[in-house]
Image 1: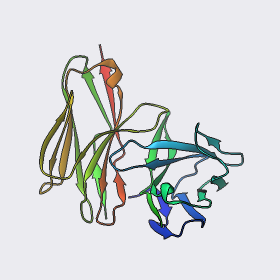
Image 2: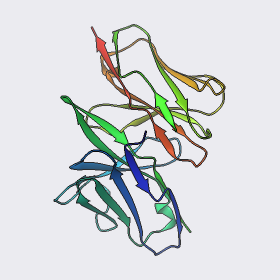
Image 3: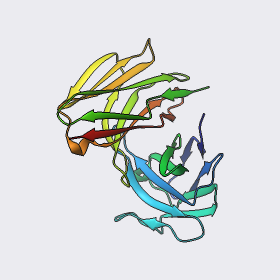
Length: 117
Length: 109
């Protein structure tokens, strides 16, 4: 079964509004979570690394003031798309590593489809 | 429930061929993706199958059988750089991604 959930699954909003997307690890604690966006049939593009208790680390070219990340607890990270515009329409996916033995296994969320009108 | 199964780990020899299988049970089907992920990097897109059959792209091929809920990724002429995790993911009827746990492929000289 799923070990990482996202909410909402899909959202449609008007241009200029803000949208919050939640990513939860369901049965394990994740001090780190990753946020990606994906365009159709393309690779996942890493946007930022969410760190519990500290500031997120953003990839080059990703506006930190536009994509606000808050890692509120060991099981929850949120991505807020502020003042969303149509070009922000995309599939947003989070992932969390889970330590199993000596290796991390990366678990991906089901994604949130954002459409900005 | 929804489920995707793929082997946890596979080992192959440089220059050889390897087939990574993926079976799925999902609520609806809108396509199947294969991704390659090197440690510490984001997954890169390899293929997308929505119709039955084999799609070839260079050294990589992907096959889909919707009636059997089955796909495989075929890698030919293996190179050391192909050592990575290979993720299978299905887009279900709600256009949500259902992810496999990934197959770690180890290439030996």
